[in-house]
Image 1 (cartoon, rainbow over the protein chains, first blue to last red):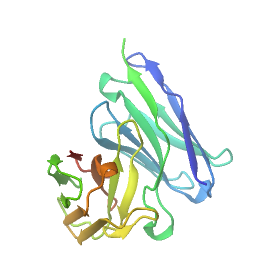
Image 2 (cartoon, helix red, strand yellow; image 1 turned 60 degrees about the horizontal axis):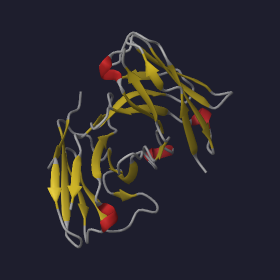
Image 3 (cartoon, chains in turn purple, green; image 1 turned 90 degrees about the vertical axis):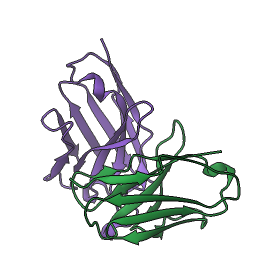
Image 4 (tube, rainbow over the protein chains, first blue to last red; image 1 turned 135 degrees about the horizontal axis):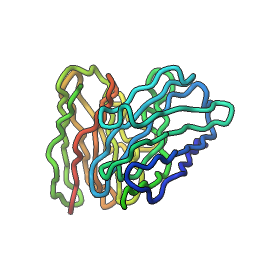
Length: 121
Length: 106
């Protein structure tokens, strides 16, 4: 069974630098591209970032480019989101998502439960 | 960037109704389109990928169609558990982009 468990959220001061983690199990993590998706309270879904299976390629939304860094440790089956220079508008639930199986099957089928990051002084 | 325009933003319906939601991409995305259902306080759940492939375990009253720029999610015989918010997502290029969402209300 595919499981994704995020952690690291909480109340953060503006300008803070928390790191989110996503522990993965139940699938071949090292061959799976992964993504982060966020959702501000009462708002829609926003794709944040994706990373390839070997970690060599990353992509970011313009809203976080230069402030957020996605990485992974395939030896620990863990995905990370380093968030720097947080702003009020970064307040959101952050979801870890497995991209897909080969050929696009199960595209964004597996999501974690989400971890809430609240940016406030 | 590929913009996804989803409509309507909300729809009022009754049990047994047929509901249609559309997403239009600002450029061609072939069939790289997925549909999700989200209920309050929960993570989104995949319904359709590849524009028309029903995800395993999803009831057959959900169906998707389209190719290129225009896509449709249809729910036939609406059930009480279908009242939720629905989103489309394009997987053709980066940045990935979601539609704005459609709330299906009683």
